[in-house]
Image (cartoon, rainbow, N blue to C red; front, top):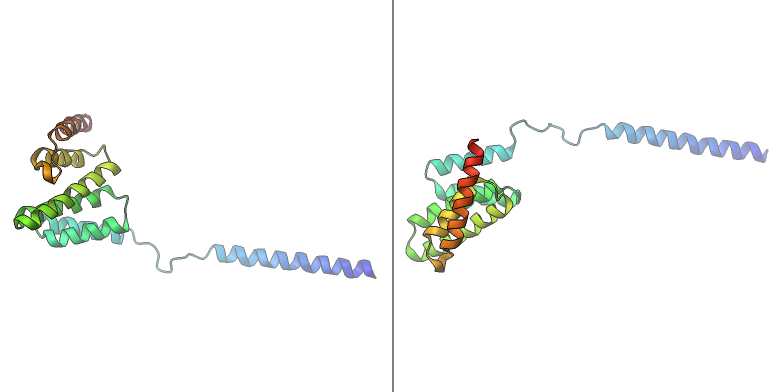
Length: 161
């Protein structure tokens, strides 16, 4: 009789294990996203909006968009690059005091973009141009600029081949 009870307990355990596995497997197939992932993501839409604002000379808007994208996607070198370009355009039209602050931000963005993607021609070219044209108190450095300009030309040649 004891063997019979022991057999029934083991079979009940196996039964519950099998039922538990079936339940787990059935829930694994349920998608986490009830609406699905769109083909054209919100990132793409925001990035395109930022580029549109930049091309329309709405640099305040493009700066905000690209800074927010860079915050959400910290490894996106293009987001950081365009945040720098937009900030640089704001610096160009700002008063002297504001321009110096914006120029330093521009340099930080370009440097970070370069660190993330040192083989991007546009990033390298624009960072080289910044170093070559900015005064030293804003981070300008002819030697760095010339070195990066050579690298940018090499990247361009390799890209065109």
